[in-house]
Length: 603
Ligand SMILES: C[S@@+](CC[C@H](N)C(=O)[O-])C[C@H]1O[C@@H](n2cnc3c(N)ncnc32)[C@H](O)[C@@H]1O
Image 1 (tube, protein in one colour):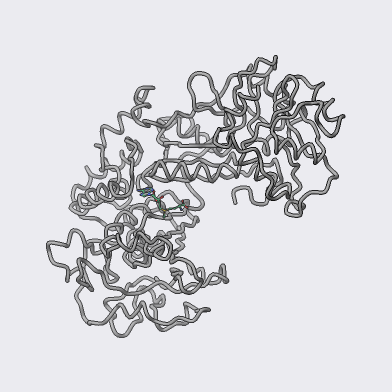
Image 2 (cartoon, rainbow, N blue to C red):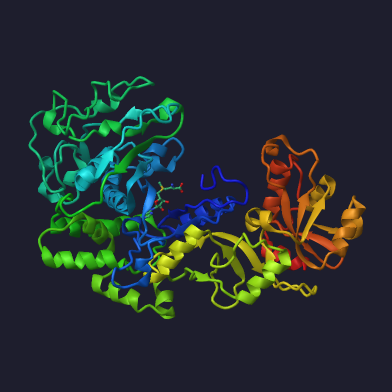
């Protein structure tokens, strides 16, 4: 999607930031996105509910005056695919049958609200946020959306997207539900025993008007029947009598007026397993109409902040195997928070609450604010323990050498686009797009608030060849599709049979190529890294006939051999999907070795 409708070699102007709290999940994300070879992606490792906004202080920076550069992190689109009880995956997650209890949904509720509120805060005015879960529990779904609408007031609206993606069979969101706690069902927060009132929150109930208010019960009815209301497959949400329609905040239900949510929650989408033979999902699309401000958000009781703090800690303990110790140093938000707490000791703006709920978890505000400003290398190591720093690679001599060795055209600027993660010898150099570059600069200006697990695309790697190669870096296969359209040197064209043999056998002696001319060309090239391209005009697989980009691989021209510097998995994929050769066995005794090992072996 990031590169949708872009010509090969052209970079999109936008970027995607993908975040997960769990390091292992970040690793999976990095692995899965690697094959996209995109320079427009940053993977971060944060608590989403305290995701930094990287706001430049007005008085603090020259950069603040440069309006061509971002002044804070703002997103056109936010997807909050939040942690949830996962009961929508019961069909495939058999383990869950033993673990599941109704309290799971209750425990996630506040964390979900906090994450989504942070999403709204980071959204641009006019932007859209999708809130999604793989749960069927209204406490994790409609109740969260209602609370977002409640807290954000007129700053957001819940969109009716019933005309989009028509082929997706969906059901409307619920307008009313009960909350279960330890086997008892409750219709309002008032019904909840005092001892459980700080666990079962008012916002979990459809009738809640604010986070700390509860309502009288006027009618008694079986809310669970709502689950069983039959909906037609092509359900028109605005026509139904079974759900509340948007009536300016007044419920249209006759039987239980005061128990229904006053929000148009039928605009949410419920995907149920038996409609499409899949899992259950909940999706809501929120449109930001104006900035969140103090008057629009609802005041939250101090005790509830404390409650959320304890609950957040508990949930995080449950949710993650490893919490990377971090200092929340979103200075601006914390500063605002401090100022406001002085101005108003008894109530708190929800904007701040959303920050506080997360930031409270481990750190005191004053400590974190001061620390980030004074950050040196040691601080950095402490702060982002286990995460390498991101450094712009600025060694002009090396860059010039790379440019001249591979004949990289001027229009593909490397200046400001190269970063490395190692402080000493820049073993790997990554290429980042202009959009990512801007965000990195902003992040540096605000004291490196974003904890970056991975970014850009690996483009160059230092090698240790003694073949007399004049360039210290070789190309990385991951970055090839981006760079290749701008390369003018170190390119050879192979016939399909030689290309196929290279993919299969990895190392071929110059004299053994089927096309003797190709062998001669390879032999006459200076030693070092090169690119071998499948010669044009040959029959290629149907699957790639529509893809105009050339099929190319990174190789090393050694003393007497041509060696492929592409991992066994990528070679197999090339053979199967790009080259149309199925069941072709690449030699796999080295499949467990990474490409660095392969490269060094070839040199
Ligand atoms: C429903 S999954 C999202 C899956 C994701 N869309 C994907 O395709 O990989 C929820 C994710 O939230 C992460 N998570 C849990 N608590 C979090 C938090 N406080 N902040 C950010 N991520 C969190 C979990 O590690 C989990 O991977």
